[in-house]
Image 1 (cartoon, rainbow, N blue to C red):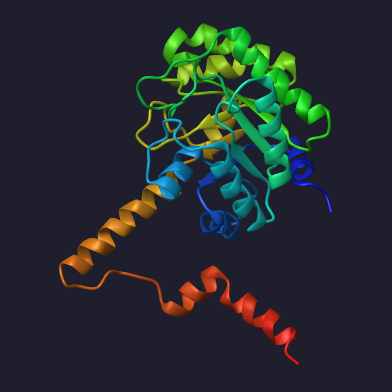
Image 2 (spheres, helix red, strand yellow):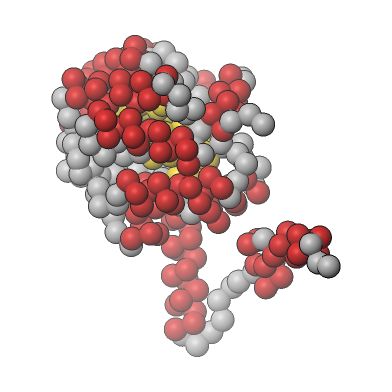
Amino acid sequence: MSSPADRLRRLLAQPGIRVMPGCHDAMSARLIEEAGFDMGFMSGFAVSAVRLGLPDTGLISYGELLEQGSNVCAAVSIPLFGDGDTGFGNALNVKRTVQGYARAGFACIMLEDQVAPKRCGHTQGKAVVSRDEAAMRIRAAVDARNEGADILVMARTDARATDGLDEAIARCKLFRKLGADITFLEAPESEEEMRRYCAEVDGPKMANLIEHGKTPLLPPAELEAIGYKIAVYPLTQLNVAIKAMRAALRAIKAGGRPDVMDFEELKSAVGFPDYYDAEDRYRG
């Protein structure tokens, strides 16, 4: 069988934009595949929220993300992107992070140029490292890939918020020269900025679509026309899950009954029918 990275390379070589929902655990990853999407993204924001109940401000560790990622990748057959934050240290840490994500089963790792501890790209208080240090991280990641880690490298910059669009574009160009497979200029604030990024940077590019965030929520067809290859919706599942759980809890608190799926449907969603089929196969 081909590797997750090989499957992702083939998808990216096909015409058209790829739409990629975000997940935070094995169940939400399975729902992405069940819905017919051909790739998904494990969001560090979402994992920090569901695993720790804490904001995406650099509080979650490499080990916690890696463990969550191993479970997420094992639950699906579609290629997944994994949020690698800042790489968790110097060049050798970055290489170890890339190698670990490849072993966990990710098809691509996202690495960013924020100062550690990092924070969500659509929140306040961001800071980025120097261009030289940002380049070091991507160089180390590319070295790890070229030395045998079967994984793509997506290089992210948050410099738009701190140093302006010119610097962010310059960093994306540098990341491509260093060998990054995909670039991701975080939080452009207008369609004009998105168009300029796509016009000036070569290779596959990702648009990050956070509901009520800083970037315009353009439809996939329009993003493709601008020049994006991937449209990610990293927090939609987490967003609607929290909203639905709050509504259910309010209903219970008020003495009512929440609107829930049938229990048989719930059992099917988490895999009981497949388990029973396997159990029957091995019954004496």
